Amino acid sequence: MNSDQVEFRNVSFRYNDEQPWVLNNVSFSIKSDEWVAIIGHNGSGKSTIAKLINGLIFPDQGEIFVNGIKVTADTVWDVRKQVGMVFQNPDNQFVGTTVKDDVAFGLENRGVERSEMIKRINDSLAAVRMSDYIMHEPHRLSGGQKQRVAIAGVLAVQPNLIILDEATAMLDPKGRTEILTTVYDVKQNHQLNLITITHDLNEIIHADRVIVMNNGEVWTETSPRVLFTQEEGLREIGLDIPFVAKLANELSKQSITLTQQPINQKELLDELWTFHLNK
Amino acid sequence: MANSLIIGQYVPTDSLVHRLDPRTKIIIIFLFVIFIFFANNALSYGWLALFAVASAVATKIKLKFIARGLTPVWFLIIFTFILHLFVTREGPVLFEIIGFPIYSGAIIQGFAISLRFFLLILVTSLMTLTTTPIEITDAIESLLHPLKKIKFPVHELALMMSISLRFIPTLMQETEKISKAQASRGVDFKTGPIKDRIHAVVPLLVPLFVSAFKRAEELAMAMEARGYQGGEGRTKLRELTIAKLDWLAFLSFSCVLIGLFLLRQ
Image (spheres, rainbow over the protein chains, first blue to last red):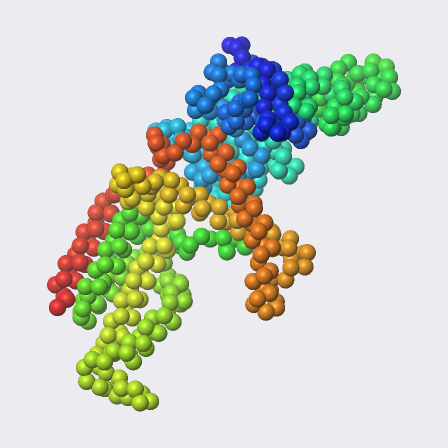
């Protein structure tokens, strides 16, 4: 299967007539099974894209297709069945009084049978390694744990596409690592599309493709590896590349040419020792 | 901090009362509150008191703990007794206190009313002691279900209640955070005349309200994104089931009621 899961055709959007366009003539498509990261600084329109995909808002111009369905007010419930979203604030998306109830919320909305519900709750909590907390109330969980419950809630409804809308932005470094490894595991074990929206370039290294947004327009569309070589351009639009990439770029300025742009510390080390060996 | 966050006064034990369906408990307590007004002599009052105390024992919660929970109302009960002592003028005068004649009817009436008051509070507090707030919410949703026919938003009401319950600890944590933030800027919540202290609450409430509204908006969006379309076609994870135990409870309560009507004059 290699069809388009999400397609934006010349989409423009603004919150009201007096305000500038948040998105201006944006087109891109995301294939099935792909992991796409959308990055950009604050106000670049990246979160608007998430809300548009899920039909929380509708475009002023252009069309959006999710799995072949055009997103309109009539089809929005069909679209939402296929799209799961995790938002930024861990507290403000926790509906249930306990972990179990919260994961159940999306299933209850879809009218899933109770026996099936219990099975799916257990499975999805196991997938995010939160099974031990099933009866916990939200105020007894850390931010990272709450976000993992939110991911479980999304997994339980078995969507084709999961959007993480700055899901790690409000977490401490520990919580952030928790979420990133959870997301990575989930992507490995489930067949689904993943869109991660973030302004932190450290979070995009596992993505297949990166869409960089700037002032409501697609600035570039490329792989993380290629993107990390464009340090200057990224800095101009207010984004900072990870330390590993920076170091590699500095090395190449010192005419130490590595065979490929390293994406994480291990790759950089490998590049360095092979370079040293071949000298 | 963690202690202050316990909602209501639910005490978990493994008693039979805890395992009753919350609807059973609500119905029985509702009937008890009505039928207590039918008691009119020492025997019938004693009978109902026996039932209330037996239920309290059956909860397996330490009686001392229940009694402590009732301390704020002791004052009211005693006040009611004294009021009746002086106001009621029935039967022969027994004795006088600093010129006030005390009638025998007054003592009886005072006892009866205070006892009734005490039993009402005891039984209703047993409800909250043995039932979690969310169970109570589910029970209310289920019991009000027939009202759906007259377009009463039962499901919405229950969802509102459960969301409020879920956000009480969150907002309490937030209040604490804001009060610390404001205290660090020199707002004094703890000393000074009452009027100043009430004024000091304003810089606490305004940010709390602002953030509560923001939370509400984000929550609404998250709920919509998770496919919430109102009560129609929705299934429920938390199920209430009337079991044998509940029928047993109803049966024994009917016996209590029959006993009441046999004992009253």
